[in-house]
Image 1 (cartoon, rainbow, N blue to C red):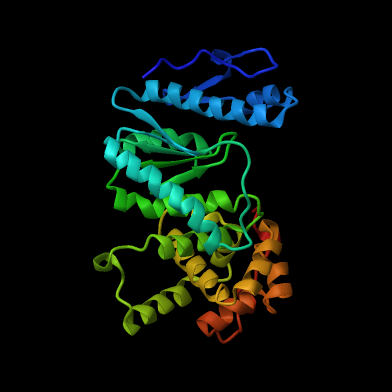
Image 2 (image 1 turned 180 degrees about the vertical axis):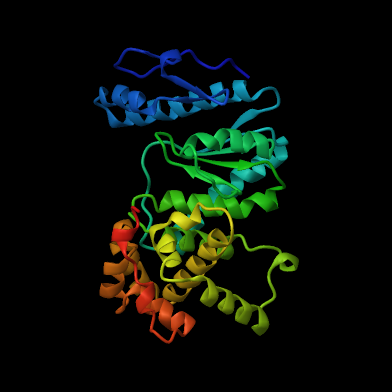
Length: 325
């Protein structure tokens, strides 16, 4: 591979040296994308801006490739880019899969996605869990305890996806999940709506092999129902509505993802009504105002119906005033 470039170039403006823009953490580089956007804003032509941003993406990946060490390669197929050490045939299959999902996800999420902005879809496949967590650690606040993850979508200056290396069939659901998040980025969705949509889209477009799926038995559904009823207290449910529990390791995270999948699955049966709700939902109140307007009841009442609670779910309504504490 060619050496990573030392400067960024664009027609009609001075070159931008890369070294002062490079930020190192855990011995891996990223760029100061705010400064790159300032440089791009000095260009009058939008087509030249877009081309220069795409070249900046590739320049960053080239520097990251060098830091990761021998074996990593950058593969490009139209508007999809892959940084990995995958065998060429697997890399081509991965790029082809991403291109198919670029077409299929917007059809599943009809009315909720847009065409996106500058840049390509970038996927980093890192060789082992240690390298993966070394890379993604920069996107977590210091001092917290967080659950594990199978992948991440990063929207910090340069949108990209990152997953640890595995068999392609194993990472396909994660790719769908994270691409769904990226396509919903224009919305101010509460975390539970965002994750519920991502999981349901993942299940629809990249379902698990038949031998690994939970059995659709009444006993399984009853056990799940009982776990939710026992776990969700008036206090704990606030971590679900605020999104906090989706980051925390343990039962709360597990049940939060499951509950989000159930709720979105139920609401999305009437897609036009659900789409109107999703477009109106706001993270600040967990989607409560949009639920009253487009679903016809509050979110706590919705859980009351789902879990057949004696109090009708009154104790489970979102209380944003408690979230900061």
